[in-house]
Image (tube, rainbow over all chains, first blue to last red; front, side, top):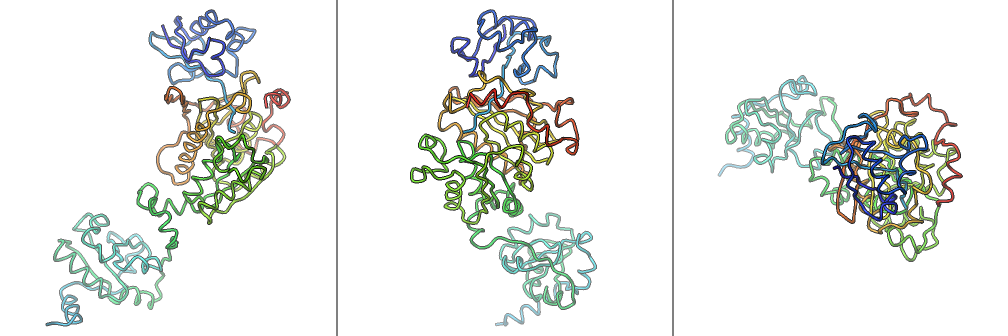
Length: 91
Length: 394
């Protein structure tokens, strides 16, 4: 199992949780597992074509999966997957 | 009892005296010798022999090892006329064991008479020396760093939640010029977090209110006010000439616009954003690290990008994030430490957790993979329909 860190804007879609445990051997499977547990997150994470939405950044531990193997990046037990959307608030 | 003059004469017999001509021939790097000015602080600041280090005679015993650690090294001391340096040379030679010490005959007076050049260092006024004394004590800032701060021009985008603490602390730190871009006026609902403003300035333009707060702390700061909305038509003109930009903007289109413009001018941007109890911080230093578009190639749709106005924010949070930004600004200006370039900090105030993520330069970045001259006015900040799309999110 790995831990997914849920950003504030997605928390309403997961019942207010900050972290969700999910299974899967790669990043794509882990995020799919999240979408199955909490269907409201699916359209926010994935495009209609099934890929990750471009405005969602995903990190395996502290590394951007875009510089790893994207959704195919292997995930080990105890890893943390961070979902990070941009924020623009400043005022 | 011998007179003072007699003692000096006797001491001069026991030490080596050299002519200014010989010292001049050493050149500015000293040619292996260290030239030490033993006069008082104010005398040194007025002018000194180029390349000389300053160790006032009153602190000779305690400070000389910091300036010259190798006792075998050639040390040439000078003062105003050659007396104090003779006494200091005697101390170094007889009491401290320096092996190759000399005193410059006639001091800096004779040096000047010979027509040799002197260095007139820039220095702080007595008032500034007092005001910035705690900076001067920190080696990472010191006099050189404080001078850099006084010469620096920092542009604050927004005098709101993030801009307020930056404005106050950067003013206090002695940043010479603070530009402020904000077209808003102070509202009562701002005062829960925007600490540069005050109850009696409700209704006042934020740039004017912030200027008052800045000058109450440090009247020497030059404040440049831009009571405008930052847009493609004015951004290049406004950011031109600033050394660092502090991004406290409250919307995505302007953040992308800022990124593209700052890449063109190669200006580092200290960026923070806040929402609810969470903040993000990074430094986008064009061509030395990733830019904003490398991190966020596309802004999220409006439903995933609520503003503080719509979703609320803990009032203290912009204080925390704004001051983390200020620290990055100081480091960029002074060169001390490591900035957040290439790193993204996530702060969760509720859980008190700090998470650090790596940010990489995108070799295919639509903006910073190209040379500044190749980026046109027309493509800055461009996203199809985005301005209209997020206008509703306020």
